[in-house]
Image 1 (spheres, rainbow, N blue to C red):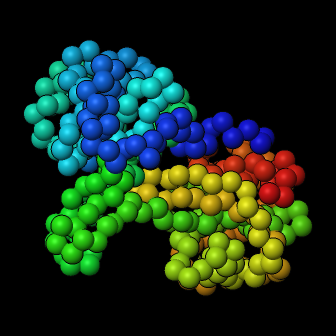
Image 2 (image 1 turned 90 degrees about the horizontal axis):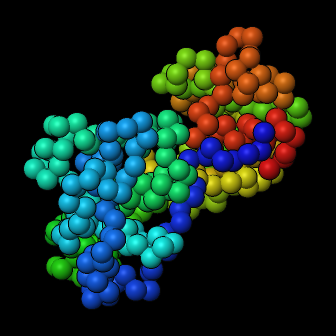
Length: 312
Ligand SMILES: [Zn+2]
């Protein structure tokens, strides 16, 4: 029950080559490598092969150009273990470069969440795609300087943007999110939002706010969402969550009371579940049809740890 093999986006085999990627000559040589790999996104969807049950990404079909562009929309992700340079590129939806491939059924654009849920890709592919999606998404939404408003330019192979007007450098953002299981004796706290699939209960979660420790964010969210006071907080695991660019920080927290109050109305319900109920949820045998969250998400793995007796 503690196997984390299904947790998505946590395996990334690339060497990001941070000391070298800012060198334009080095980067140009990587682009011109024989075996360069270019992952193409259209908006927030990745282009994958449509001919065959298992999508593969490099190249998505035999006559795909595959060459990494050198423009504003191409970022360097890193070097694969075999030395292959891996880039990612954001294409327009009406891009002529791939439209014919889609039209003849060789390519399709799929969102990353679906790819992860289907389990059709190896874990290390999902990790690289998560990196690509977050980085490309950041560039697409940070084209102007937040200090002076001037258009910015990509630098450091995609790991910063520079303002030519005021000189300010901007760096890709990752937003920390606490996701936690409050535990009281033999019970854990789960809640559901109205947008969840029917019957699904999950761990409570929320963004870390400025000037806040991880532990305090965990205690604040549990108080705001469920009215539960919390003592000790323990780290469990973390997971990149590229929708668009979060880092999920999985925690176990000792609840100090059991009286639930849905203070901020973010949840439509919150309940305490015994270890046996949680086990039934994971196994799909809960008598009320209550279900655990998706295996790709950290919430399910917190629940698995709780059921197997782990405190963190
Ligand atoms: Zn500026």
